[in-house]
Length: 361
Image (cartoon, rainbow, N blue to C red; front, top):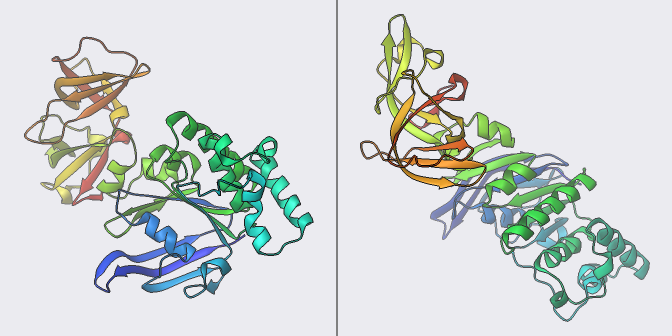
């Protein structure tokens, strides 16, 4: 298994258009690192550069201390699982999984041992003699993963492997991938997805890509609880974090934040006097709002739309002064609240402050 190091990696097309720039990242042995970001941010391009399918325009990629920029894909010790299954339809599951080993002229005994071991891990032993057309979508994706496992690579690369599956199969296959990682604790894996649930549940660490570079790297909870900037704060979590504009003001002997929408943040999130008058954004996750019956409210608004999801209810409020709608995510069912005015409080430790898009604390 392997460690990876990307130093100053850049990707351009035509020598002028930057797709990615200044990518610096270290991936340790045994980690499952997930690349996430909006469409077009370059996450699949970065994965393909690691695989050797895209040329690195500048910078270096090291695998186990060896620079591999000019090493062909087949010699990098990497196996890739693509979005499409890419199985040979005329071959059985066994033949699909063993194809690369056959080309490498491995012995029959080695091939059978590797295929049977992978099939056992992926619960495919009963399907080895079937053709791909006789399998479900989830089973086909497991065959594609098995084809990677038999090669015993240094690094596994997954390029949105679940995006072609329906919701139920996606959940089941995601759980299988988590079990697969547990059964191979020393394996290094890099996984690309646009699905936050996949990222949050599978990753040792998440790499958020944006604006042609890395916005933040951290564990799932670090990104959720302590985002370094507004982009990460709003990208991680669903629905997105609310951002409410305001100003740091003095209240007696303390400083606090007064919302343009009318509420006042509690003094326990206050900053120092040097920040008086500064314009800031106050971030609150929808699930951190609590209904407030008294006058000590943080936000109030007229309920515009509700979405009852059973265990939770989403409340969307009418936009204030042209700002984005605020949304609250409340436990339980809340009926007949559309058109009413609701007041919310929020615990001080759940409030995030941003100045010029960067976290203040």
